[in-house]
Image (tube, rainbow, N blue to C red):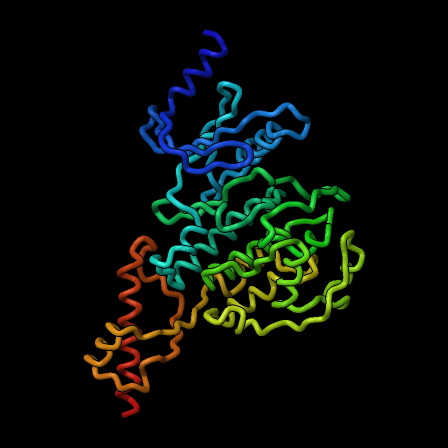
Length: 363
């Protein structure tokens, strides 16, 4: 059997269905593995011939994913060439964290946020333990399966780190998730750049919108300083020595309570540590996992009473002063993530009953 026949036999094993997405280097398909009957995702990559071409990027991704076996990292099932393209076969995931955050019909409980964030940190911790930088952390690259399991994906920009003096490009990460040292042109960096991006994802989960949205690198730094204040030499001693350093007008940090109004004090404390300017002082992923916030945090739920809700409140006999209370609900792992509707109703009834009890006590 010729090499082409072998390639065709392997390729015929997978029946491609619809296109899931298209990128710079290729196309991602949904497919059926005829051998197992399972649904898979196939990334078809156009092979290049340049020294720094896509072939090296793809081969590097394959090598890293074979080393990074973990429940919170996407599984590479198979890799094979066919018709001048490289095909990477991955386990199929239903959606991604960006889609979940953006969907107004999906209710994210405190338990959901805690779970998604913990799984993000756990996957990242495995990478850093193996001396791998992801360098493209963003909600779109955090895939979610039908059982709610979150997994890190897209390791095309990932690199091994830890060698003294090794230099990297600073043009990594989507801009909104790029650490300030990268925006100032740092060529030598470590795991702290992934931590900054994870902090952006955590804030986005809490606020249901991107935390730092700049239109350019300069504007991105401006957005960071607007919210977190302009760093001083005391906060970041090496700042002025960065290749692209420029001085910005002095701005003071905004209160974290204002930046993430629904977060608990523990969550805000963790965010402040993840957004530390000096990369050497920034919290590590392992320290973030051990922080009290991912273990058990609570959100402050602000209830806005709609007309149907108002009728329910009136039927329960709750007087007007208790219509819009501020209630803290601790670590709600009440129901599976897939049952958002029931969970939302259960939380809503908890709020109403709490209002009712408070009203009775103060009558």
